[in-house]
Image (tube, rainbow, N blue to C red; front, side):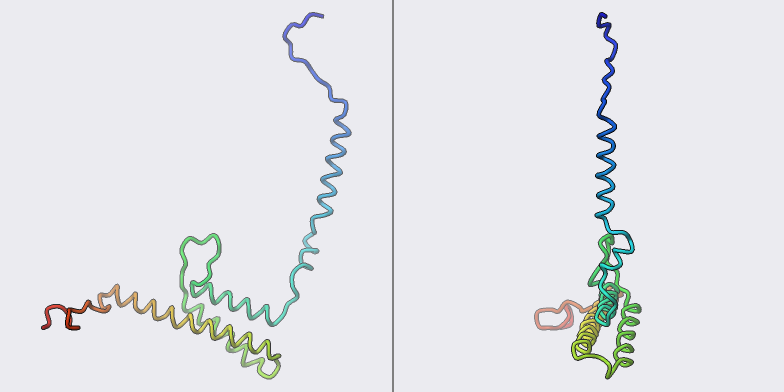
Length: 150
């Protein structure tokens, strides 16, 4: 039969075996991937340290120290930060006498850090508001007086 330029049809007799092998490999990968209920087992058990760390992280986000990855601009929410600090203070008061020394140290340290950053952010926001209102520090002349006052 002469070659008339028609496309050749190639029949792959091994396609069934290859499809079966791919199916088995996919099933094997599925077995290796943990199911959702198995993923929960990988999480650490609930603990006081985890609770304190969760509040501390939320506080640091509210204070603009930490930001989610997808956020392009950091915001400061002093009201939320104050609420989180107050909640940690309440938690410390309600658990007084029931904490291990490590747990007591952890909550005290988290509170101290959050309060320190809260004061710093409050001052920064107050200074920025004063500058925006034209009430910021005025440049001083050579003798320490505002220019034109001597």
